[in-house]
Image 1 (cartoon, rainbow, N blue to C red):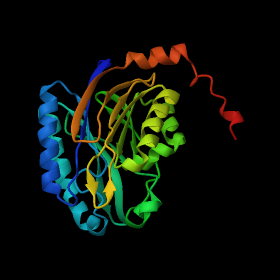
Image 2 (cartoon, helix red, strand yellow):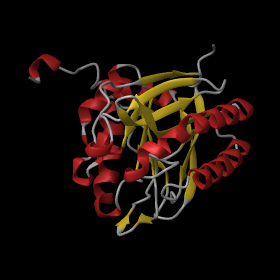
Image 3 (cartoon, rainbow, N blue to C red):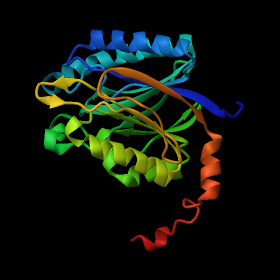
Image 4 (tube, rainbow, N blue to C red):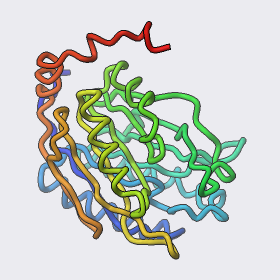
Length: 263
């Protein structure tokens, strides 16, 4: 397979309807079709985009995930797209918050179970924690996966970079109360690992909890290439993957790491 040098990546930021799988799926598919017409090859959806955090019903709602994945597989194959998003995954031991990468041939090219569960909102009561970092091997190249609270743990993103990720996809339901943290941490992860960060956050609100939006596409230099505000939006940018090597050659911090001194 020839090496991909340029990718038009797109993000879909929307107000997820709590527990309404059919509505959320229809909304996502509508935007995906339009973005494909505009030349997108990679589309990112938010964390728990079909259900939201309907925690009391999450086991029941997670039964829809295989059907959703089948639907996405057909869309990906028909439109020749790679689609990434986080869904509830039901297994014998409980439910995981899982990011799926559906590649252009309709296959699932990567599965990442969220490692860091946000205990202040009792996420750890309803979900099982993942145990492995994941870089998905896709037709567009290696893509690392992170979900929301993972962003606060720089070790995870660094491990993805060291495993060869050129792009790290971040899916979130990050609150407006801490939007300043979101913006700074996203740029930090891009700059320190010298790769592209694609970060999609939901907008809107559940009860009193308001979500930030502020989805971003960030270059290896830390430049914000595309951004959304707090309302529903789609955004896209052309990723020139050669910029990664250029950045790392000019400032070779990954090569000049001294891990033996870090404890």
